[in-house]
Image 1: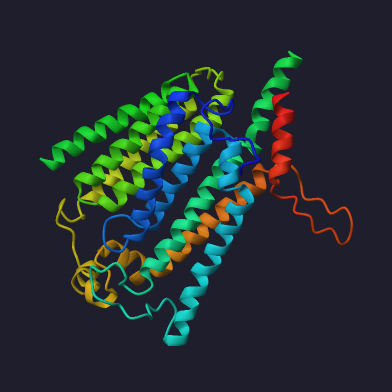
Image 2: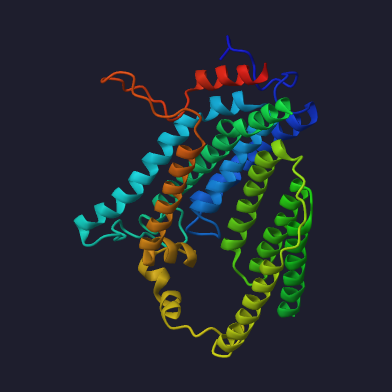
Length: 164
Length: 200
């Protein structure tokens, strides 16, 4: 990282102004921490995989808007998002299939543990983490698809204006 | 008390929707749509459903950002208002039919705040000891009704797949027989190249 240009620097021309960058630098850690809290404590407190995953995706979108596409793509490229999405979708099918070995499909097979503990409720926290990662990567991939691939819309508008 | 607040929120939502339809500017239309999401989230909070309220408000924020990002490029669109008699008359007729049938159907619903709990009562009583999850919503969504969640995950997966296929800029080309190059999703270097091209 030392040889590369510092994309997160405040005087970098990419992204928004100094004020936005400073605020985002303070807020982004709290956003990611809150997202992971919602995912990991999904079986104890309100929330769960989908809500927490959307918060994490909002964090990546915030990075993209404040610091430009280049920094966000080094944190999570669209290829990485695609791979994480596919892997989590596959695992979310494989873990219920694993339940067949203990009885039937979607069986909550591990020991349930003591209620209100962090490690309890069998496979439910695992499902929450899988759904959270899947939703994070897929929603960020949608944002990338609309803001990077989808810019041909503006190109078409420009071409149409030039013709007139 | 709760019902009065709900009526206020519903009127707020309807006004926001009408503004979203009637306004000329695409950006203010998108922002007016956000009113509906915020009001729905507050309504869920007042009906004691914090899980859905969190999800609703977060999804609304993300959708608002994506819509603004996607519409602000073509924001100069001005929608010309025109009067279509057939559309207005047919929508009025169907709205009247909807009101009649909704009035007939609502008579049979249980009163507000007193649902007929049969299956859900069972879940509330035995959920904690059967699944060990303190959050009853998580135990229903991910254990009792795990099949539903699997279907939802499949829906999200397929919709993401479809949007990637539709929004990609390069078609799938196979130059030679053994060509295994990934062309559906652009690599980082290609995106940077395209971005530089775009900025020039």
